[in-house]
Image (cartoon, rainbow, N blue to C red):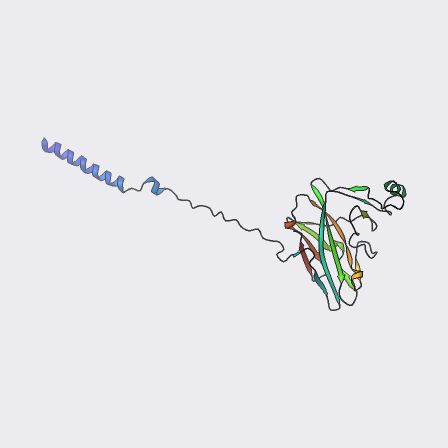
Length: 226
């Protein structure tokens, strides 16, 4: 009887040791846990759309041989609205109501952009630096690129439009050919110089806004506002 009891105790101890060994040899729950690496938080730089864009007031050349041109976008203005007048657009009665004879006529027709927009006015200068007549780009060949979108200019009503506190006329009206600059002769006095007006979102940033000029069929130039 003692032998049976002793054998039973020894057997129980043996199985206990075996199970204990299995339990101890099994990997712990923490060892089996899936380790997820930390995500790479390095910011991906945004691609610059026009890495070779020039600053304002820098000139670029176009043309060939004796027909050479020089072009630049030299400044810009931002306006939430503007007033204008035009003798060919407004009636004499309206003009007389705006200002007295011999006085500097003030604009009295207000132009407003759509809700959430503003007016961006850019100033362009193109000069013939060659020895023969030069065909220069028309206003339609200058567009504004901002935040991935392209904006075309909004023409003023006529060549004699005067905008309050804005010198000059719309680019393209200087030599009496409507909205096409056309051909200009060599010399600084014959250059085409004027503004173009664009309506763009008021939230735009000059640092991400460009003026693109298709100067001819072989040359395109970009200027960065900021």
